Image (tube, rainbow, N blue to C red; front, side, top):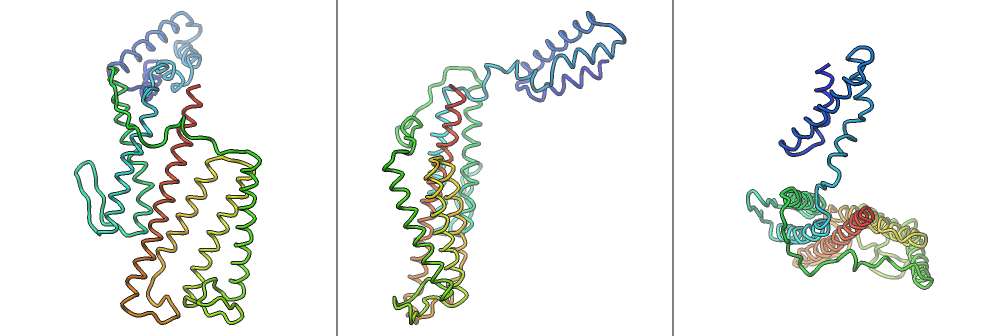
Length: 322
């Protein structure tokens, strides 16, 4: 009988925190179950124990009853979670950009490690860095909450507050603007597809399409054109969807797609890229300029993605608290 009971208590203990508190709760549950088993000992002792344990409920549900009113992070600190994460991530993003530009490592052991990164690696690193920053801040707030003492945390007055973020307007005129934008993007995308179908590229050195001269070599021009057309199409789909919903998820998905496509552009080799003759002294400047522009756009898109994710998460927390 004791083996069944101990196994049940051990499972409950997995959902409880704090050694002393856990032992106290498990001792109380053990006493209740044994007392009830003695009162309802019809049949064998094992059968009575099985009935009592089944009536007591699943281990997780039992643990939640004792945890009720003991949040992992106090409600007063929930806004701090995303505010502090935004601040830490902002510094993280700045140092990541510096690691890419200056090709240096940044190490403050054991708090920070940013290795020497390429552009593509940096784009993959930033979302991971945001999740790590969120986890670190959540862990600190968890310890502050579990101390149970009155702690007044500073509140930096910059960034976006949840109550300051307005839901995108769904007025008639805003929808008209979105519809016009969608129509324009449909036209741009259709024209780009037409040019690609006819010339296998959408980049030219002249505007006379009857005698079009491609700007890029055949393979490079085809790949870059397809990526740009995909970006046009993603923007078009986003605008069309926004005619029916103003969900932040639309913007977040659009950000992810844009980052993936920008990453593909950044992986494009720049050697033997152009069909026109370019002076050797200008090539390094052109390459640097193109990479800088793409990286800058990628950084803006990444920050917008993080903002949308934070707004989505904070609104869900706000709904739960109501």
